[in-house]
View (cartoon, rainbow, N blue to C red):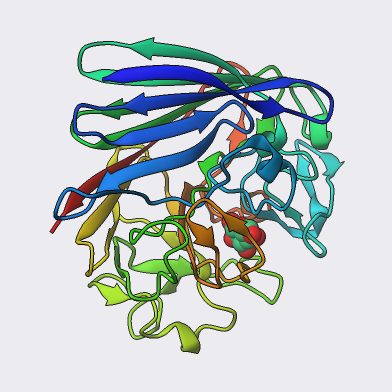
Length: 345
Ligand code: GAL
């Protein structure tokens, strides 16, 4: 196992940004940066042992400061959408930035993805990790409460990358954290993900309106293009879904316990990604807004050139009493754990 630190660039305000490269004994590499506590590269072996970087990203900070659809980022304080750019908590209404049509997306104008985090690397015999820390001040992006957040990425020799999140607050607030990596198991820039075969442990999903806000309904996937309870090619039924997949799936099993959520297999390289999480939901996004205008690590990112599986609480939870609550009160600790496991067939 090895862990190295190197400079990644400077923000426009002159803040230095670092990178950490974690390598396990099988050659699996995870590269992380303090800018947005992001995953920048993730190299996994194919069935003949050849490594490729399987996530989309830039090779220097300058790329992330330009056109960035949240590549590999830690997203918060509230990942996904909040309808109408406002929510009410304990009788007080908070107006947020409307940075996605009429709605708030991924924490507002300057979310956690655009902040420089502090970092603490750690290494032991069988694991190597980096702890990222960020203090989100009271009323930053107009969310109430001073929020202390940690995100720990841990790489093991089992070819597992675990992401552990915690957060505490000094006033009631709302929290929803996720990682926004775009995967292409053929390798970043190697065409679309439409031939990847996806299985999701979700009997239900949350249908949305035209602005991608949940209607509140928890609908059965059975008999719809959203049924991935048995494996399907992503592209098989995507034409039946207006705009492509960009939906929250309701995960089965006991929320709060780490349990399997998704399995993705790429038939040509044999690479398999399995995701487990403690979260109640996962946003399956099929890279619909990628349009070939980004040229970064591995080549050009075409439409459907990557997919995201964002483990999370449901979008717009503050407006839906029937969704699991995203309220965090003083004295409580928000926790979420998600594990990415790579293997081959
Ligand atoms: C996803 C979201 C998409 C899109 C994307 C960023 O999490 O569901 O609608 O906004 O982020 O381009």
